[in-house]
Image (cartoon, rainbow, N blue to C red; front, side):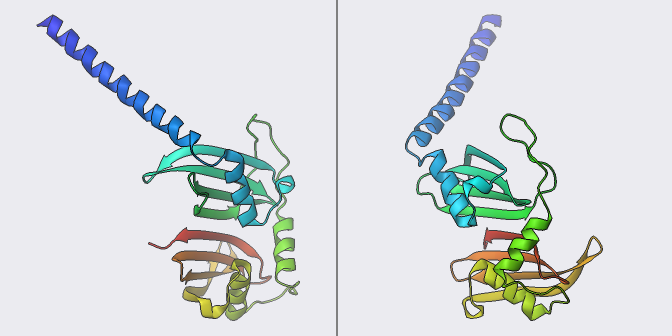
Length: 205
């Protein structure tokens, strides 16, 4: 009986090792036929409109999500954190998220990079929106700011939310809209200056 138990244990262990090896092998095969890591990074940077020279941290991982092999590309630029999920076969952007960087970045070697400057994103957003003057922003102006940043006109989207709210003692506009290709855009816009505090872009479920 003891011998049978030992044999059964060895068989189970062998099956587990074979399964793990198969998964590893499948990942190796998938990566060998995928776009390169550098291409995935370039797709993300081009979509964000950022040069590689302006990136403070760049990290790329190869992973399996929801039935697809993907590249997860994360980087920080001008105090904003960008997270991209990119199809490893065709380079299509599956998901992206943009938010303020909360703390200092570290590179792959674990070295700390200079702290992101919080003033620079506001400067960039002001330039993008034709140097708006500081002051109170209306809800219609907030919607226009979001549309301009996303590159759409009002007749190409459907707004699902546009309201004034207070977050951490600061008044912000929460603006959300959908596009015809099934993407959902969510913006937090500073009610006083019109600066884009955060934005999130996802596939609409």
